[in-house]
Image 1 (cartoon, rainbow, N blue to C red):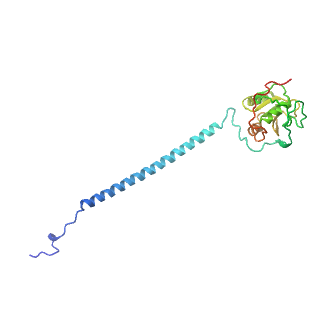
Image 2: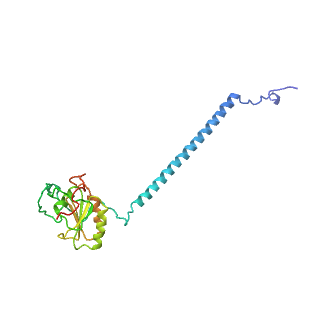
Image 3: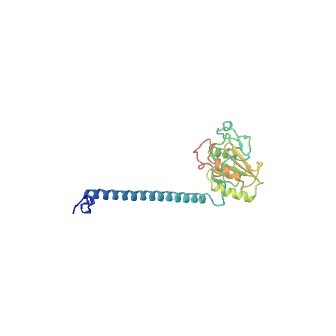
Length: 230
């Protein structure tokens, strides 16, 4: 009997991986699994961050929308041009102190020489007419002066008084000689309206209470005359 190379008894058995090869392969598998886990965690973390950020933005948007609704209803946009606004060159409006009367070219006045004492204008509502020379000094400090004639409805006068009392750097008084029912005046600026609900009231207050037209920004609206001089 002959035994040749093809005899199965002479077949070379398959080699088993050495201990070092198995260890290397196991480490490679472990590293691969770890990398996959880390990648999965990174993707999940990114997803959670995006979800949290989106949720915060949604809550912020909802909160802003609610905050924009003030008591009394939405007043709408107070920016933009004010229809019927009259403007005077501030450089041509005198700012000297005068102890006597001043002849103003507009009614009510929006600026010019004035008395050294200003009227308190921290949301002050005067039931009687006030001297122009003192009110103009308040305008110089950045106040808005709300005046009304007998043409104004009692309900409008009451609404305006409530608004003024809640708005620093404003004052309000009757003004018999003005042509319109309601006039809002700031230094060099003025608008006439017929109703307290006219959106220009909110526009004017938003733009000119301590607005850019103020000749003396930072000057007070308290510590002046708290009562109307006789």
